[in-house]
Length: 275
Image (tube, rainbow, N blue to C red; front, side, top):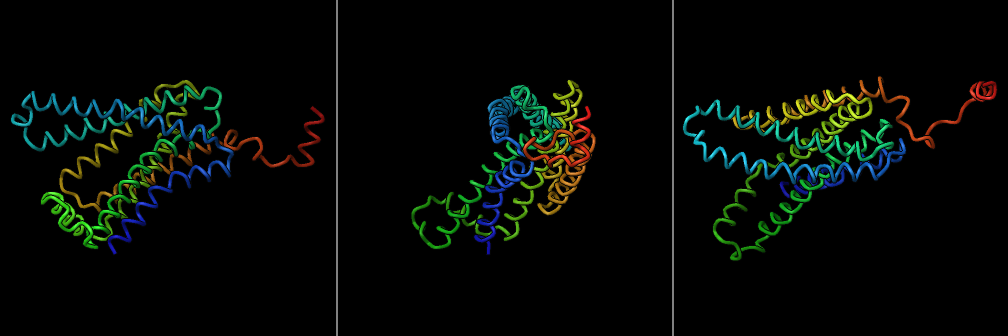
């Protein structure tokens, strides 16, 4: 059962971004160029993000803060720093991605497609890792790795085999929620670029930081995976609601590709001729 859920979860995480991309492309004429720019934006953000995390760990170790601060304060500070770093790196990269698109950033469909690429590449990488774990677990349980593993690796595989069967599926749900969050964050940044209001970028950084920070903090307090995914379910619902609001206010006139718009009716033809 566990190997099955690992495989199912890995496939969901691998295929999810492309499923969203294909739907946006077929339904609204969204550009795959925008999708891959969004994916590159995530990779670029991590090139900055990961060294910053290392620097924070280094400064924390040298400052001796872990010995001088109470544990509760350390957990809260860690959550705030991790959340803000993630939001700052990813949302600034998203902002520059929209700037690179120039005229292509104007349609609302580009906000959704860039979000699908940005959150999608993360989902793809997670899914690839999960499928790798599934293959390793199958080999381990089948006895194909017996005598080939050092004690530490054998203990790790034994621990993996004890994973509750539903945990991989919770991980797949988390990716669905995360991609929905990225779609909403892209809409937020899109508004800032489209209407030249940097305040939306600040909002995106803050909201991204709050979500990541809360999840990190609650996880450090020992919340169960099921409870944490409950939090992500709330985030997903809020993100979907935000996308719907932005669509109604700003996207109805610029969502469809011209080739996807319906043909004008007889009355519209007469109006166009009269004008």
